[in-house]
Image: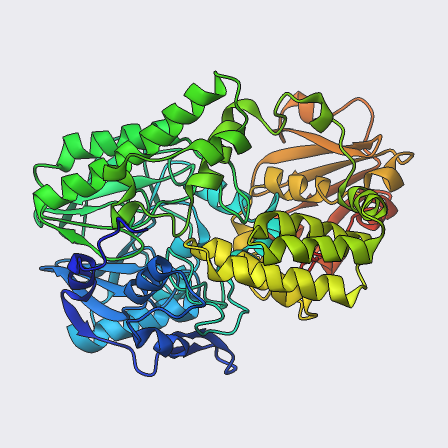
Length: 610
């Protein structure tokens, strides 16, 4: 940290450049008055001096992310920043405005569009672009294209819809729960509480929506014109998202970097959970971006943080991130091939000073430590090759043995506190974590671990690490945060394919209870022109689909139950509306049997306690 140049004000100059106006008060509510965004809660960040309860580097980053309002990027391009975790960009066309990435919630997106219109006029939305398939870049789409809006082009990279919805279905419950801890939205805002998430301040808690794309971008170099605005696209799949793209506005010399080059080290595996990203291909695409647009772009902006102006500075920024990813990838594999494990490599990894000391490469959101482990995981998996780690006891079983071997839970707590007092907070957390899992109701164990988590949080440069530590401390002290973000609303469900709908049921089947149940169903979905053949056998729900008119759609043995219905009817049936409006052949009790075998996910499961 001593090599970081705190006197460098260029980021602050860039973050304030082009300021037009702020939303005041910076509070966004739902129609029924519930607050889903409160930017004014971060007024304490006006203090330039960092408190003892925050890492100075993270405090600096949070102050930058907290710059809020409408900003002019270049002629005809504006951004609304800090009305959600992400930015919304607006590009003025011949007759209206093209919206890029409409935030997480419809309410914050509508507020951002209203702020723009207040200062730029009542321009209609004439196009919508999704840079990639994460929810903070499409969830607010109905805030800018409400139901009944005239059709406009909705542009996304190939594979967008599948990846956007799948992430919210298969492991969406667990990811959403862990996101509560990662972003710390339920923590009190303040110097001793939540001060940001590195990538932005936090997540809004409004209505997630999804307007499906009407135009896919499938290749680099593809050019489209929307409302008179020419756009040249670069496909970047499997970088920050499975489906992602950068694009360039040739008539304005402006480059949109999506979320592929922000002002921090990003994640290779987010703490909320996700598919591991590919650092090798990420570095490759950044190099390609420099080759394609580096000598033409006068400003580069992204879906988070603030823009970078000037061709030399843009190339320097992109090259710095390119080299960061390439170095982490190559050096992790070099040490892997020397026999080191992910945890060992994470301790040894040190970025070159010229890379590490760039503010834009600091680990505010991702970190060297957990990104190295993610690269290792991508290639080697969870097992490090040590057979003692092949069949370890689960946490509670380990904890009870630790407690017994240390002479009981009180002795284990005392030893943990001894390590904490000596400054070894990491091992203190390990021992006290065992104490909590061995005796979950022991108040002294919970308080001791909460204190250690608090200290670890206050010392973290990474915003998401800080939030996890402080959320963990809050849970230990008896306040379990509820998951308020709803990612499975009807509009999201309508975007699911029938295959995804069946997969979402299969994931919920309580296997042991279903071991001895065998049933077959056929769903003929008339507006899809296909029949899905479902089989529950040995606790596993599997399926295949055929064209409804094909011979394969008529099995020799009839299904126990055949439903003939439309996709909206299928969604209604799965939502518990019954089979009254559906054509039924066979025994309707078969469907009830399947539903009765489904598990109900827990949206508020504990994270740091058993």
